[in-house]
Amino acid sequence: MTEGDWKFTADMPREAGGEGSAPTPGVLGRAALGSCLAMGYMMQAARMDVDLTSLEIEIEADYDDGAMFGTSDARPGYSEVRYTVHVMSAESEETIMRVLDEGDRLSPYRDVFANPAPLVRYVRIIEGT
Image (cartoon, rainbow, N blue to C red; front, top):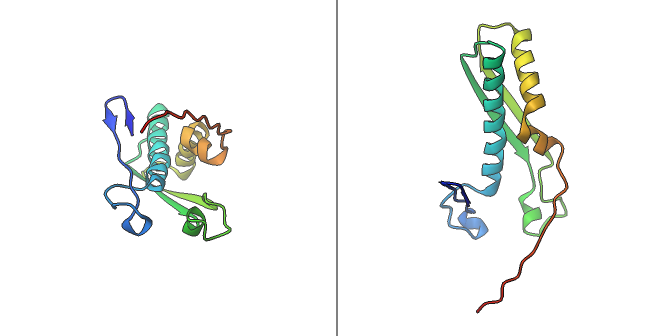
């Protein structure tokens, strides 16, 4: 995968037919959510002049791997995604919650996970040997 000058690699574990050489797409997706939340919270804290000493996001997701391989009747996506925000700060809980609530409201990836947009597929078949 490339985006401008950045190059990303994804792979699957050996047990799933991959080489185990890079994170899976699921890891990258969860990392996108967690990093977007963290950056958004820090942006809001700066905008609101709130001092956060440290901030970490923990992402958890429930899913059934069997659905991806056609061995389960479950849907192939997540059945639930949870995130825990770990904040170290001398600020009041009310102030911290204002920062987090505004960060959640403005987070693009939180919105992607909470309110999926219609997904449209296009196919281009190129003849070749």
